[in-house]
Image (cartoon, rainbow, N blue to C red):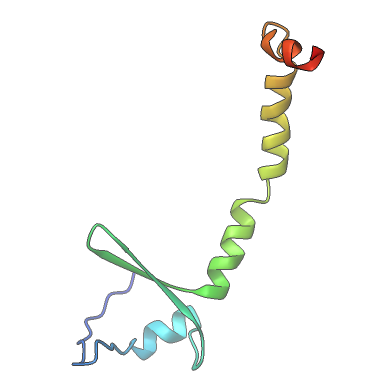
Length: 86
């Protein structure tokens, strides 16, 4: 973990230290997302965040199909049969 202090200008701007920009790969024109949570800030490159979201949900269709099949294939749950007969 790398930590640096920065000062906020009268316009609310900060400068990200060079070492951190290079480490993360932040370049001029990059979009950053700033999230506040319980008084803490998270700053992340938007393009990296998009990749994380895609990765985080890569197994979602399989999990959803498995979960739904467990519900739909539940022979003890006759309530759905009532709706299907109508």
